[in-house]
Image (cartoon, rainbow, N blue to C red; front, side, top):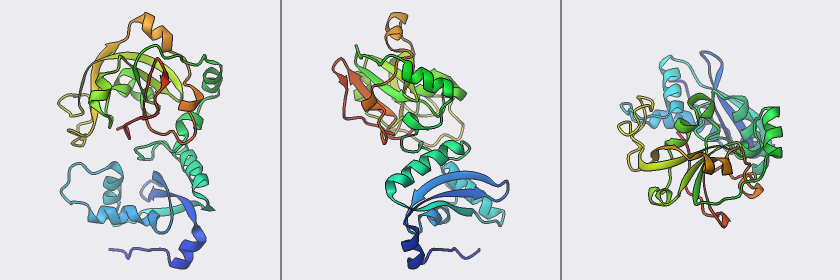
Length: 264
């Protein structure tokens, strides 16, 4: 096994906050983008070496690193920018995640939903759209990463880290794509995000029983949907750093205590 490289203390001090890419040498493909300090860039290979050899629910990133190692090759580590403060590093990381859609990052970069990669026509639509007025108790879910591939219903209904009891109390589910509400659904039932409950999920779906949730439902009535579709979120819900995919609102406006973490 090749000796694992690492930065010396001197190098660490010079680097400061940096943004890096992990590249698969077999195809030259970027499969992960991250930011860090110190030896963070090398931690992923170390994590793979310590992962259970028989585990079935390894992340896509760890699986890729394992395949590279078994091919007797090494992950290519590239420092894309360095010498930044943390805030700047977050912005650069988000831009690179947009630039490398094949990367296996589970979460979009900070601010990517509100200020990230966007077609010029979408920007015009977004900023000319009327601002939403909430007339019901709703849960808003960001589907920007997967809506083009899956469609709004499949993209919005699973698999989320949230409080199912809180979600059940909402009247409607609003699917949001880059700050614009694109569809409205009624959740008939919230269920654990298992392959049994959601058979359209990938066959290698990790065991998310008790950890992630989804819903079975249907389109909202047109008179309700028309109140929300193609409306933009308030600026307070689109501010930089608001990367959480789950938000709540009611007749008083946006609620300040979102839950949830990442999408599949």
